[in-house]
Image 1: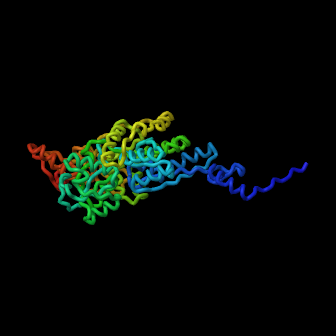
Image 2: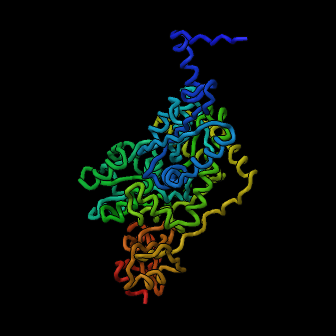
Image 3: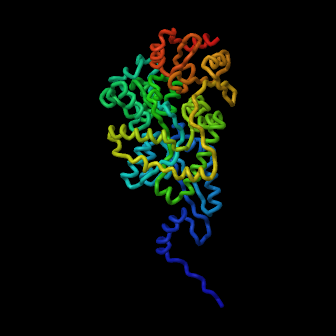
Length: 453
């Protein structure tokens, strides 16, 4: 019996079915047996280097693509990752609420705006993990020009201060000014600028100070283009960056979200066990000095990397809401509804030890030509080891806040046989004022090095 050949589809019917084929897998059809394609869009901030385990480092290591490839082999789907790089969290939120970015990473204040905008625009998002954190707030710093006459936060009254409104750095600035008795809106001339624009404004003299998040303050200090005026850790309030996901995406593709978090965990393991290669990798990808990257992301860096949604961080996020409400950037934000611990619980159930809480920073020395660094028990030991050596970078924690800083950019205090370092001159002066009876005095880096013995 002869079987008649099927007639070709009418052109109109082909056009009608084409959108359906595309929606079911990037143009592939069930008839030709080709696997469908799913693209996962990830928004990240390459130069916000305490998000690297969900962005720059993760992308360079290829872990997410590896996880998706394994999933694709199981379910017959081709997965692709579209990495989109932004300078701040705001455009990532805009793209997420437009349904164009599936997963994004940003700081604590932008995360709250992300939650608020998602709810308003009926594209709800959820916080599913943390990238890097500092329990005292040391990730944000206010800096001035190297030759600035400004000596403390109080000196900012009436001055031009550049920041990115709605960012974690802006939150630090607002709180710090309030503690100093300065109205954050009327007491200064606030310049709402992208970090790179603000850095240029500081160098050009059109801004008197710059309040920014990682890695801008450290980079400018390392390059000799700025000095620290205020250490965000003086607030003693946790600050962090985290990963947010569109709720619809998380519901439709929970396995893909699990793959992302598993890949983030692998990148976190890499950074924590190989901090120098990780810093070099991020530096290569971003053009940032590796020494500045290591200041934040190193073994004793300002940032601690851990995906866990720690209660200290969620508690701080709740405190941040009032700052954004006062600035009329958000209304009420239900933080508990925004935080979704379930994906990380699924990951934990599959195995993997929890990371310990951040330990106090130790002085650390990075010599030229070395792929590892050496930690010391005291600033004196660090200075002694650095003298006469080919130093790539020397790091020392602030004696009060614990914030790591470049040893040659720190402000030093000699107190008897002790040598102490401070991120800011104001911090050093405050310490000397409280310890006058012990003979505490401010000394230069060169003098401190000489006194190290």
